[in-house]
Image (tube, rainbow, N blue to C red; front, side):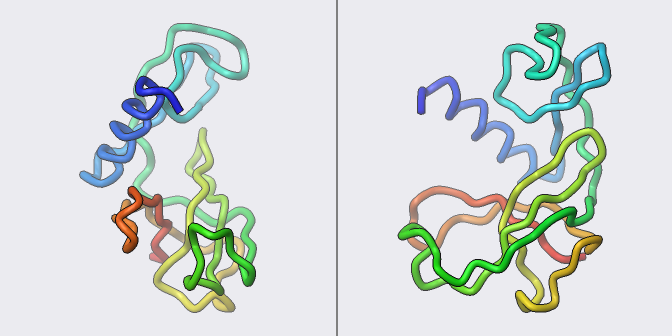
Length: 127
């Protein structure tokens, strides 16, 4: 990952962490997540920051029983894709037992420091 990409992603995580989350919107009505220089749908370079909705809903999810090495010791856990209007966020769902997570569940995005000190993690907290 390049420094520019990391800087843009870290800035976006900071915005989520402070309750000022945003996404990028182009004049053609497409939404995307930073870092981006152009719209991935139409190629427009005219991107503006729009406020990310406070809450979204789980659109798809899976219970992970066999984790990647980075998540060793955390299974089972749920990874979900949540609809936030013009964009979708992927994160780990917390605040409910894995078996209790259902599509349609209201979630809010938060950022937590990983316990192993290896960066930050986008978390979708059950509302």
